[in-house]
Image 1 (tube, rainbow, N blue to C red):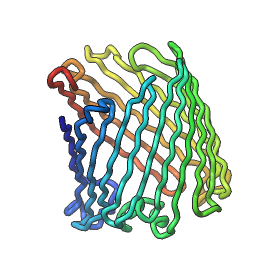
Image 2 (tube, one colour):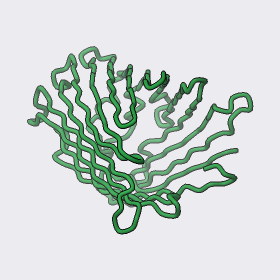
Image 3 (tube, one colour):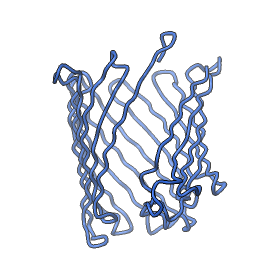
Length: 292
């Protein structure tokens, strides 16, 4: 049958000249019933609107599909239409092919800057200047990974084809992780971005850890930490690095049906002095007729 979800809240990235009065983020998603001839095909329609000071900031409608294919292969697609600019802002296509312990993935993303960055100047986004550039970005991605009982190794490459030739770029990275019981894992990634634009060249390092089922206080606790550091070849606004760090913890209740998590994020980069954000999230999963 139909599956319906929705959300509503305050957008935290909008300028606060007039406080939060008249600010709202609202949206929803409707998953359509799967066709009888293609039970592994899921189709959905979604809507999102962000309002700032009673003024429409962004308004998008999205159609997406996912299709499970024979042999464990998987295809997904998504297209977003900007109701504010009356144009497609994004197309995204992905294909995954598992072969024994290996997993191959190919993806293509197309973004129209004029439609994607349709928000007004009240939105805190350092890339808003792109909305009037008339440029488009084609992103081609490929990745490979191999999973074992306790470890996973992977590599990926991305090519950014910008209609502004001076901004073409590519990224290559390798990733490795160790897995414990349940979902626990620790790992890292190292990568390099090269570009025609010297300001877009950087070396990236990432470390992450997730600990599941921690036996503390008699609760099934879990904790996570993630850090990403990028060192630029050329200074941007007087800075040559960016840093993002996140740490969180949570617990599951009611036979894992209810999950509550609190997290804190810190970031600093050449476009912002620093930013600190905290998030409290609660997710409840219920079952009906034996299905979630």
